[in-house]
Length: 398
Image 1 (cartoon, rainbow, N blue to C red):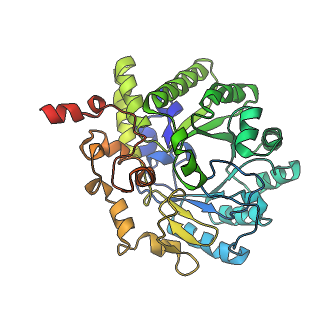
Image 2 (tube, one colour):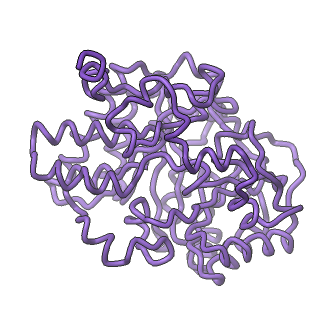
């Protein structure tokens, strides 16, 4: 996760993170990406059920009921996560609001001292549900969007999904619940990004996250529809330009990109040309961020209790919380993949291994490398930085 507005618009200082000693449990949400202890944010896909049929769903959600963890067992898991020090519990799916006890679980997490957020398609957030989520102290609601009505409904394969999502967003706003947008970008909807920025202004939405495509679940079927490197560069430039425009207008919007850690060095390189003094500050913050944190600063629990290094990498199971607490699984040095992910710079291969930005990118997404090359330690094919930019040309000729 790269805080575009924080880095490019100079709205956060390195000293801001040091004030909290960079401890995950103490840092405000907008500084969490710079924590030092990397206590894992846990994405919990509490159900695989969903009322939509999104073509890019990494969880391969279905309308049919799958085995889910019961309420009391779920509370035991949350209690363990809280005691372990996980700062944030992101409740996702499928569509998490398909579970009737979602509010109860979120409230329990909050009462245990965690920040609870949900990732939803927004279509099930009635006024009453928004009021409930606000009353339990939910920190944030992220509503997935794919562009304007035609594009969104096409991706979701349900007519009216866009209008219902916007109504859910409005219901959250009326209850004073912080709500933002989440958009996964591919060739199919990249043209919709400006319209999503327009939505931020028109509907006074404070936050948006733009996700690069990860080849996982049904998203793996869209691999050929991923942006090429030139298209990705144009996308990131557009995001930077529109974010700067909002900042210049005095509109406080939090803009982030997710799932491609080449974005951090790209911002740094652009700032070297535009504002070298700010570039030095951003470089320090990127070092705090440390890049991809699969298996270290982020983890995932599936609807059936399986633990994964992140929400996209379901081919690898580290254990099951119904058999062993997450806190014990996560620190088990006997689990080879976990041990390697926590020291992955030793195992990264190809151009990633020689990249001068390895310390601030950490090799980007291993799940994407494995999906594309069949080798989890191969370079991430979505890295759009040139050999010259990463210092590879100099290393080869020096």
